[in-house]
Length: 232
Image 1 (tube, rainbow, N blue to C red):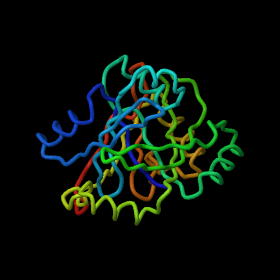
Image 2 (tube, one colour):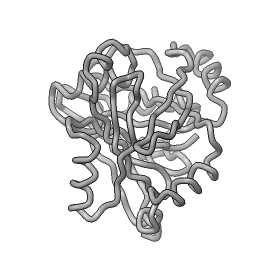
Image 3 (cartoon, one colour):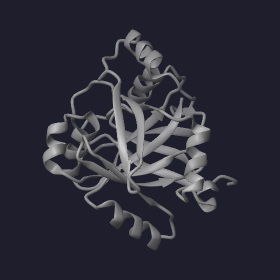
Image 4 (cartoon, rainbow, N blue to C red):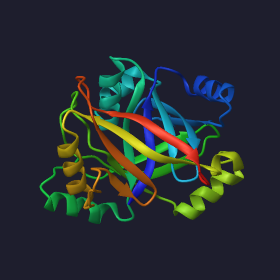
């Protein structure tokens, strides 16, 4: 299990995000559209994970989708743009679902998903969400299993120019998560993930550290993503 990507909720179209990131000296690409969800995205691939900027493309479809991530997008955008949640990759999502059920969690069931790229290609994957009401409380991460093996997927990203050398030298090192009860949040996440908690209350996955910080505001969310050169 490791970090797959972090999700930023935005009102901007993918093309706007790409231009904005170019002005900041970063290389992002138009991801494409989730035709069944009415959403679209821009993506910035890094060495160990990627950033997704998710926005609504067709509101009438998105409102009818009843998809956990789309519902969270609508809920959070009422307060403006910002980080929403994060996604962890697992090798055998069916087996993982059985494990979390044994821990007492209820799930969405495994969801088949796909995205139509700007070039018209179809990317497919499976998703899993933990059932919980959409609210200001901290959402659990969601989970993904890609149709393609990681090595093949990253090779394709390099070939198509979505993962340039400069991006490969950069990684997401820390995800900062704000909670009213950070110790409880870390314990709950560790139980879900089948992972241990570090002495400082964080959770160290193979490619990222999840840090839980005290927060006095109403909304508990992923609030910051730390990016650094791989050699730093």
